[in-house]
Image 1 (cartoon, rainbow, N blue to C red):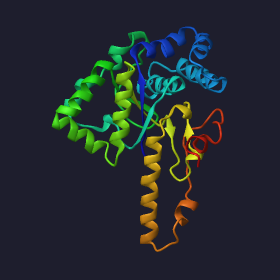
Image 2 (image 1 turned 90 degrees about the horizontal axis):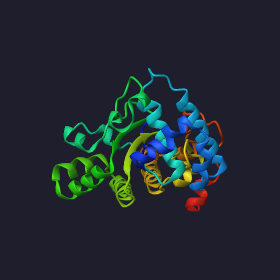
Image 3 (image 1 turned 30 degrees about the vertical axis):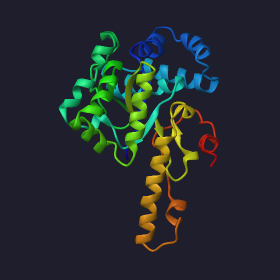
Length: 261
């Protein structure tokens, strides 16, 4: 399975207000949903996500539970961004560690589990968190530090850098941090209309999924040419499997409505 990476603009205050405070009083969801115009369909998803968090055991991996659920919930409130296969968690250069803030520094001790990685370790997992001041610093360094720019450009190749910079700038403009996660949204590159999402697809910026679709179609076309088969044969017969199980069926026709396709 590949990596469906997303970046979620969210502040440290919002992490607590939207997630951990709701653990103490789940009725806050009604108030938050009204204040933020969250539709009933997504309010139910919100409730389900909080209930999953409440069932999390102390020996669980924080990033696979609470961290991931926070990314999902962020998407009920505001825009998030998708980049296929590219995550800061994959950069091995330790120079990037200075931009991240660990969960141990973000939330109280009683809210932590015993196992915390502070990066993506497998699918359905949160990754690094960049606080607001480091979002600003990373953008500045990208413009002035050749080592930082080279690492990021290599990671977010094939125009994905545009999406990542868009996510950083959105966070900067709105005074937010940026939380990385994987498999919050799983676009189907051969048919975006059959994509899957735990959060609110309407808040997913469309540029990333469209780049993924373009790259996938180019790869398929190259294979068809190599195998001397009719154009479109592989794409029309491709089978797309999503491993996560939706508790509720996502609204139909999202990508069609968004892109007019």
